[in-house]
Every structure is written in structure tokens, then in C-alpha cells.
Amino acid sequence: MSNQVEPQPGLAEAIYRFRIKRQMSQEQLGLDAGVHPTWISRIESGQINPKWGNVKAIARVLDVRLSELAALAEELDLRVGTAPQPGQNAGGQ
Image (cartoon, rainbow, N blue to C red; front, side, top):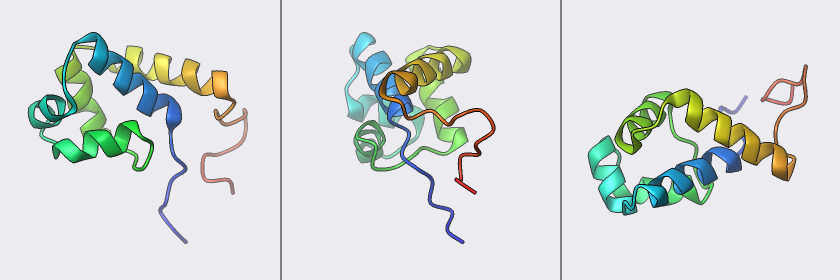
């Protein structure tokens, strides 16, 4: 069984929007969050999903509460219809 997780476009877009709002480059966000700068690009493009610790570090650097980041990510997911339906687990099992 694979640990591969579906891309999270809402989270990717939410991170992007907060980064742009803060007028930060991907490189600066990565360096300040302790994440390799190229990972920010890969996160924002939906190529990879950040680990929980990295999400917390990114939120801290962006000066945004995790709940605010999650709320925007969920709202964006609902707009594109990618949010899991109630009772459906994220692994599709």
C-alpha cells in the first residue's frame, strides 16, 4: 500500500495567496520556514504535499493562523470540487 496522498490544490493555492499578500518570494518563504526553496514551488504547483511540521512553519512565516490557512484551503477545494465528501476518507478506501 502506497503512502502517496492526493494533491491538495486548495492548500497549494492558499499558501500561494498568503505568500503573495505578504510580498514574499518562494525563496524567502522557504528559507525562513526551513524548507528548501524549490519545495515551495513544488508545493504551490501541487506536485508535493507538505508535511504537517512544514505547514506549521510556513504558516508561522506567513504570519497566519493554521486555522485561517486551513479555512482558505477548504474554501478553495470546495470551489473546484476536490474536497472529500462527508464519510469518505482521504485515502479512498
